[in-house]
Image (spheres, rainbow, N blue to C red):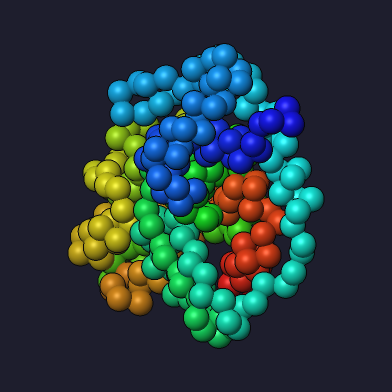
Length: 297
């Protein structure tokens, strides 16, 4: 073991997370031949291919999968040992943070975050980016972005998460809608036609699940992917839309919308913050997570 370069295991861990020698090289600021050479040395040590080609990606062999948890744990332990906790130099840092988030969350949350951050860290760089939920864990582990904000989803032990905020649903309708007068009742709501927003092609959303439990059903006229489009429709028709109240308030600043209380008991929408476990003790990362919590107070 004293003849094995510990940096080889860092290469192993990053290739495992990226599934690509090219992406691993970019992540580690090395050339692809250097990555290939590191893997060659590890293959000779373990007498195993460790990674094999699968189309454009490389996938771990059974042995690589078996040793991966111990390699990751050892690297994290070494990182904690070597790290000297120091305050993040916000006033002078030029660090760049990439945050994965959806379009409506970007509209509602990102401007407030940028204002909060730049007051203390005027040279910091912030970037928001979209992502596919099925790739969230891989993108975080590979360093494609530093953290992500989304609804609750299943992630592995390598990803940390916390509740950022909760949103109460409301009903959006055009100004002057007949149902905008007085308190909106369940029978009135059910008698109308509805817009549903979902990234899935089919299947019930929270309101429909709540209705199913009561043996009820509503008439869905339109299903779309984004709240912006849905609010445009609601503002120019008699269709009703259920959405988180904060999103509704934001979109009502530019569209002629009336917001009413949803006459149905449904769970609040949870919005979560996700980040890689390896960044848990990173002073800059911790500083930015704290600013996100401040923005959501």
